[in-house]
Length: 373
Image (cartoon, rainbow, N blue to C red; front, side, top):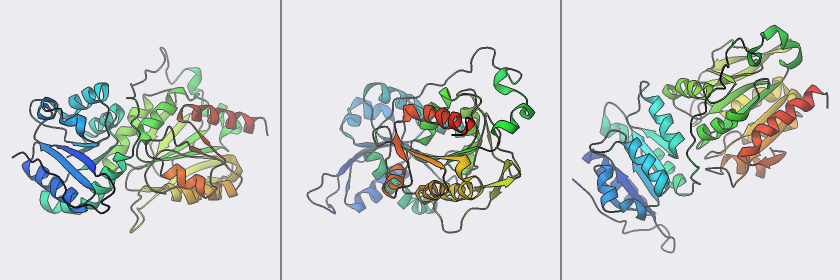
């Protein structure tokens, strides 16, 4: 069953409604999304179709402000349509699909191709599960409407001949004295997977150890760490309690957990803790930043990247007050300028930086510390 409908109400009659195109082969999902979006009053569902070819045939995608897109559909799958869309008529896309641990790499590929965000459909109890996701869906579609669509990020290849035995992976003992007392903590949300990939493509392999707090579900972070490991010359893995923060290495906080930095002598280690009860942010950027401020202070750098909401702003401010160096991604290059904006407004960041200059900022900060400046 296909649906074409529009909202007859508006919370603000002078505000133009957000036009949404729904593409999903499930009649229930099409009906459900149409219903919850039209109920809000500030969305207009221009069409709900069962596969991408119908959207292409009727040029419906050209009329939409936001598109919700399933993955597995007849005639053309979601990734194929997403590639075509971003090459010809870039639009904000929110993926709504039954992601599992096995296909989480596909979800990350969708984000790399240009999707703004994703919602994980429940695999059991669909009706009840979707009702629980109602607010998340509405929030993400509304945020997508204001998003800046990045150019698709192509996978980077490791330099020919790069191996653990090369100079970029020199024995840890040769580097501990010089760099283990430095920590770089980066927080990101919507648009962050692509932003981090771009940064890691150009990071030098001898930079201080990094902690990455990216808002992702538990099933996604291991795949994200693996994909980031392939993006450049930094060694990336999903964090485990007891891992040491080492130069040229990055630890990704597992989804559904939080990470605290602990100091032992001149070395830094990580401790994973349970999710914060009642918090919508797990992993929490603030929690990690607060621990970095407490344990590392002036020997740390904090960075807030693109993302919806305000997670990380207070933690970044605490790090700056502890003499750490703090920056935020600028508005122009942020997919969603929520988190960087909040950090800037409360004075948490020393300055705002375009995405393409953040790797240089990291290199310059590390060099200044090395010189004792």
